[in-house]
Image 1 (cartoon, rainbow, N blue to C red):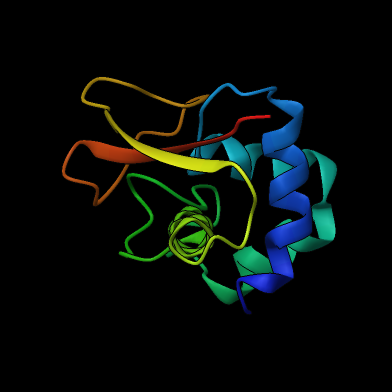
Image 2: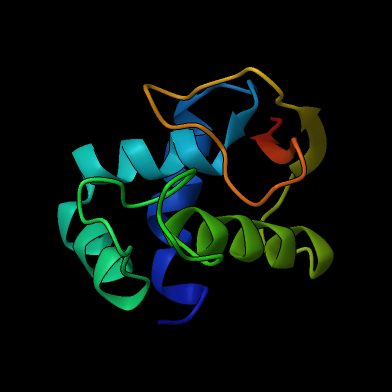
Length: 116
């Protein structure tokens, strides 16, 4: 899987957030609902040891669909591939995203927004 494979769907999700920041976990959860084939491809490419936990704490792996999305977004920011895409960092200790606790992040996650 390549970063370009998710670009259209991820940009659409961020644009629908209307300038509000989202984490890769939130973006993945929205991909699962709105772009199921893309989500299934991500899960197949980056499988968890525990299928019930596709990303975050408890996957048994350091790289997950959320890691891929985060790295793609970081790449899009660094290469200016998405107009007005911003990245910031968010301290996430004690935070859960619809039941998903961040894993392997050092209690800091990237957050992204597209500002008009």
